[in-house]
Amino acid sequence: MRYLLDTDTVSYALRGAHGVADRLLEHKPSDVAISVVTLAELRFGAEKRHARKLHELIDAFVRTVRVVPFHEDAAARFGKLAAELSRIGKPIGILDTMIAAQALVLDVELITNNTRHFRLVPGLRIQNWST
Image 1 (cartoon, rainbow, N blue to C red):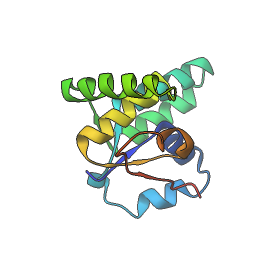
Image 2 (tube, one colour):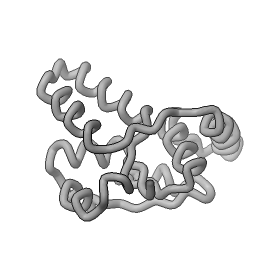
Image 3 (cartoon, rainbow, N blue to C red):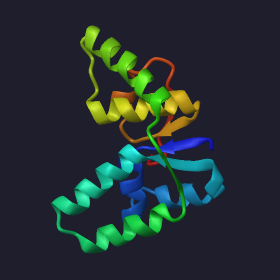
C-alpha cells in the first residue's frame, strides 16, 4: 500500500469529478486503500441523504480497494497528534486527525483535496489528485 485516500478524494471518485477516477486507474489496486474512518464518513453522508444509489457506489468502491482498520498504533498516534494540534491552537477535527494518524502509522501518502488542514500535521506526506 502506498496511498490512503481521504474522504473527499473518494467522494470525487464516486461522482466522477476532478479527474480523480482517472488518477486512481493509474495505480494498482494494491497501492490504494481507505481508512475505516473514511468508510464511516462515506456511509454517514449516504445515510444523511437517504441515498441508496450512493450506498451502492460505496459498496462497489470498497470491493476494489482495501479498507484499513483503525488499530492500537493509530489510536496512540492519534492521541499524541490531537493533543499536539490542540496545544498549538490548530486542531483539524477528530476524524481528519484519525485519518492523518493512520497515514503516519502506515507510512503512506494521504491523498486529499483538504491540503489546508492536513498541511498542519507534522511529517504527513500529502498529494492532491483533484487538481
